[in-house]
Length: 269
Image 1 (tube, helix red, strand yellow):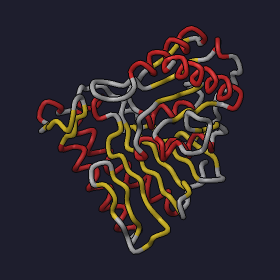
Image 2 (tube, helix red, strand yellow):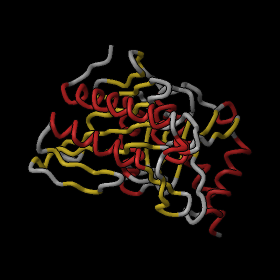
Image 3 (cartoon, helix red, strand yellow):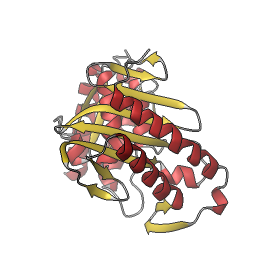
Image 4 (cartoon, helix red, strand yellow):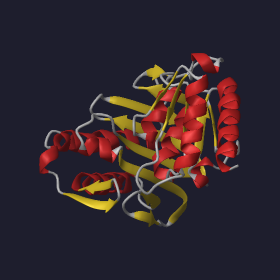
């Protein structure tokens, strides 16, 4: 059984309660009021309602904690040492197209360090949790990253930049390199679940550029607690700040980092 601190219990309860509303919304996609926030970047009433519900539930249990919210931005609280980082629907485009691959993502920072994490797909009822120093779990099953060491036997995951977003030439060079050396590349469209899949060994490695903290905060802790390595694309520890991320087991992390570095360099030369 996973260790659930009082804070993590609060986070999982909030995610399950909000997830029930998302399931109802998911069954009535055509009735959602959708507005364009930018090219191919949708925000729905479900996003806003879910974020508000999560904030209310977490504030009730942990009054004074701050928030970093996808829709609401930074909300300071009197307790300056704790902050929740929330993505109410990671994979909004999947959600709005009826694709059952999206998640609620909640991370808790203490003194700037990630200490608790939840990634919950309400459609599949898969609840990924992690507590710093206590391991990572999928429901009640302990997670470990893949043991594969050879790139040509490994499945990699990524995120593809879309209209108006990202360095397309750099990504295409990285993708070409990954295709030529791996057993396959997948693009599922939900960063938090991509990281959770690395933690569970479903994916062997995952990389992406241009992400926000709420996309990856929970997933970063889950991968690390499953024995994986997470870095930015320079090999440093600033993935949360830069939005550029690579997650894998230790042997593959070194190989994929070199592959991506060489590809990005060639794209700029």
